[in-house]
Length: 147
Image 1 (cartoon, rainbow, N blue to C red):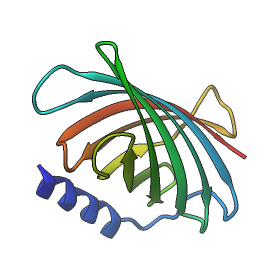
Image 2 (spheres, one colour):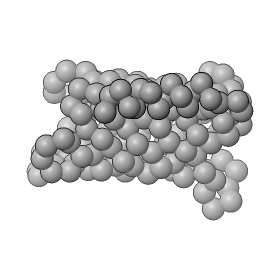
Image 3 (cartoon, rainbow, N blue to C red):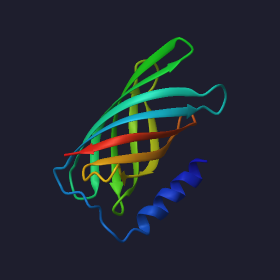
């Protein structure tokens, strides 16, 4: 699975010819609801809040705060991430989570921004992430506010 995901990311970046529509200095706030599916066991639910800024027209770097709950137990994670927008709406990204309990973990993912209700600065953001150490696949959807 790791090899397939890495090959997909490399091909997506290498085949990109268009640049993102965002300008340097644009800030983003993202709130996400996700369902995480470990390789063994039941699915988990997670809420996360992200804040980022475009350092170039196509690279977004930011911070993430996540809350995961399952069967009466919960965990809060802090993370750093970076996304590369290879056209007007699609992106690939990677980051690292620093959980409340346990070791840090790397994640990779991809998603696509699409305008939400004809708004100029609010976007719907469906995406997938793969957590490399725990082998968890997360499917989520979020709303992104750009300002």
